[in-house]
Length: 165
Image (cartoon, rainbow, N blue to C red; front, side, top):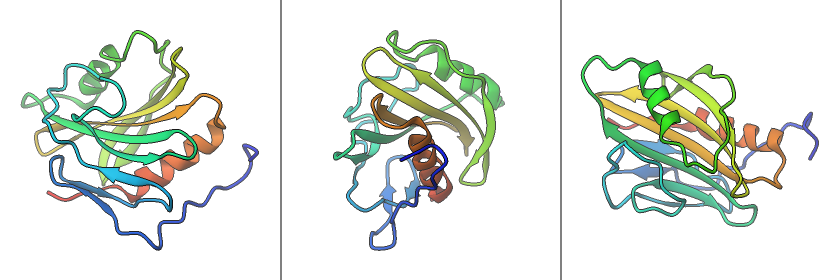
């Protein structure tokens, strides 16, 4: 797929994925599957894919994982402060981040950025605050996948995201 193509994810035949642990829902594209986190995330590190700390929606065919976690944050924490904290806990295999872009997540202000990582993944990340929690959302994709397509997938999933609390 070329970077000028428009990617449409088919979510019409699926039920939304709902995370009871992190209080959100997101449309699940055809062929993807969702797993909720089974352990609370502390917000002070980002572990590997498949961690029980993460709610994740996975595309096994093309090596993409849409991952969400949330942790309590201090009263008055600013979004830029949360985003900077999430950038600091990026794994050492991830290089310098791209410039941060303003966006939204479930109607809340959010900040998005990307990392290229030497472990074979490109990662699009998003930080948001909602009801006393800091959220980290990311799409980890095999670096052989098309970056423009990854961004379209991330945007499609982001736009379907809703907070349930």
